Structures are given as C-alpha cells and as structure tokens.
Amino acid sequence: MQLSIVVPTYNEAPNIEELVRRVAAATRGMDVELIFVDDSTDATPDEVRRVAASAPVPVRLIHREHRRGGLGGAVVEGFEAAAADICLVMDGDLQHPPEEIPAMWHRYRHGDVDVVIASRYSGGGTSGGLADNTRILVSRTSTALTRAMFPIRLKGVTDPMTGFFLVDRRALDLATLKPRGFKILLEILARKNLRIAEVPFDFADRYAGQSKASLRQGFNFLSQLTALRFGKMSLFGLIGAFGAVANLAIMWGLTHAGMGYVLAAIIAAEVTIVGNFLLQERFVFQDMKGDASGVWSRFAKSFGFNNAEALIRIPVLAFMVQTWHISSVVAAAITLVVAFFVRFMFHSLVVYAP
Ligand code: GDD
Ligand code: MN
Image (cartoon, rainbow, N blue to C red):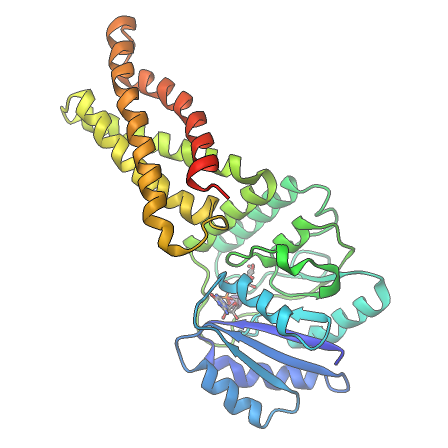
C-alpha cells in the first residue's frame, strides 16, 4: 500500500458516494486505501458500507462510539489504523478536491519532506469555499496570529490550519499528540521540527450538508494555541485572568444594583470558583485527570481551597477598604492577583497531583 487516505466524517452521508468516486478516479494507477474515521449520528456509516461494496479502491470504516478528540482525534486514529506509512488527510465534504492528491503525492516522493501541506494561501491557492466574509477574516487573522506565535516552526507555512495535508507518520510521535478539535495539522507542526513542502489548491464549496465549525471550535483553537506555546501555567493564568474579570464585573453589577460589597464579593467569588473549575478541567488539566470518577473529589479540593482562600480574602479586602480608603473593586483586584499564584501552586501540586 502506497498511501492511506484518512477522511474524518461527522454526518456527511450525502457526500460519501461522490467523494469515493472522485478519489478513486484521481488515484487510478496508485495503490491507495480510503479510511473513514466516523463519529456520525446520521446514516454515514451505512452509506460508507454500501459504497465500499462496489468501490474500485479499498474503503475502510472506523466508527467511533465516543467522539474523543473530535476531528483531530479521528485523524490520529486514522493514522494508527493506516496500512501505509504515508497518510493523506482530507475533509469528507469535497471542499478538498481529490484531484490534488497526485500532486501532493509527487511532491512527497520527490521532495525529501515529511509533510506536504495543501495551502489555500500560497501562490495559486484560493479560499473561495470559506462561506462568508466573517469566516475569511477569522481564518486570515488566526493564521497570522498562529504564524506570529511560531515564527520558526511555521517558517514558510502559509496555511497551518488547513485540513488537507499529507504526512509520513514515521516522522511523528503519535503518542504525544493531544488532539482537540479542528487544528490537528497545527499541533503536528508545533510539536516537532519537520521538513515541510506546500502545494497550492482551491478550497471549493461544500458538495452537500453543512459545516461543523462553531464558536466552540474557535475557543478550542485559542486554548490549543496557548497550551502549545506557553504550557499549562499560562493557560491557567489566562483562565484565572478571565475569572478575575468576571469576578469584578459581577461585583460591579451587584454593588451598582445596591448590594453591599461584602455580599457582592461572596456571590462573585462563588460563581467564579465554579466557572474556573469547569474551565480548568476542560482546557488546562484535561490530560492529567485520571478517571472521570475523580471529578467530584477534584471539585471538592478545588472548591474547598478556593473558599478557604476567599474567606481569608474577604476580611483582608474589608480591612484594605477601611484603612486605606481605596475602592472595593481595586482592593479586590489586588487580592485576586496574589491569590492567583497560591491557587496555581495548589492546583498543580494537590488537585491534579500526578
Ligand atoms: N470524525 C469526526 N469527528 N469528523 C469530524 C468532526 C468530528 O467531531 N467534526 C468535523 N468532522 C469532519 C467533517 O465531517 C468534515 O469531513 C471535516 O471534518 C471538516 O469539517 P467541516 O465541518 O467541513 O469543517 P470546515 O469546512 O468548516 O473546516 C475545514 O476548513 C478549516 C479551515 O478553514 C476543515 O478542513 C478544518 O480542518 C480547517 O481548519
Ligand atoms: Mn468543510
């Protein structure tokens, strides 16, 4: 087998037949297999089986019960299951024209590279299939931001967020990948120094169905970027900062509604404690959690610590307001900054102790 073509699918039933037809036509004369790694809730798996029965290329189906890692997790499972070491990833909606596969394959064969990226933004490539101006702007901005954050690793890479690429899986450490959501290529490129080539392509319109991109994917992307670049502490800090702003906003709202600042601070603190815990579980320590049954125990530790901290913080706050005659919001801000450092130590050493 020369090439394994990995296609992550989530509810793409009406696209399967056309995709298989065009991939088979485009790769005639090559020794390829198609692997659908599917998380669908619609008839996609049945459709893949039906089309596979009469397809001119081998078509395999991995249907996952749990959507672990989303699109990126599906891609990594495809790499693990592939019969060939050279794996090509493409979307299942025909936005990535299968006719580009031979050019990518040739670039790999003659290029002495580990990765071939099909780029919407290099000479000749276009992003016409991005549905509207907002998405084009988001895509352009996040690409620029990402390239600025990884100036060395992404040198010469015009489209680190494309979902259309070829990799030699022997060059990757599959076990170290922690895929989350859409941007699996970015993670591959950020974790290791690889030899990269690009070929341009025209991002087409979807053949059928709707995009699964969402605001949630956007947040996934931002947290992934921060985690890859700066590690857990900064992500924890980002969430802490977000929590502090939320805390102050709640306090501001409640005191302006006429509530006393002590009660307002208590309510703001409790809301922020629960919110921060949920965000930390999901984005910061997701790979250090062990089994899911421990979630209440972690919550108890985190909640207990943060309340103890707040209990100390509030008298200190009152003291600062009364003796220094500063505004309660400024005093709260000072205590929150100090508390942040203590909190990070406690969470990494106790709550999520290895
Ligand atoms: N297995 C699996 N699990 N597949 C998924 C999941 C999931 O949770 N979510 C989406 N997919 C599949 C879709 O079925 C499709 O085949 C492919 O991943 C891309 O999803 P789309 O919903 O078509 O995404 P898009 O067109 O908005 O995004 C594409 O362009 C982006 C750049 O603008 C993708 O190629 C992204 O990877 C790319 O970053
Ligand atoms: Mn798409």
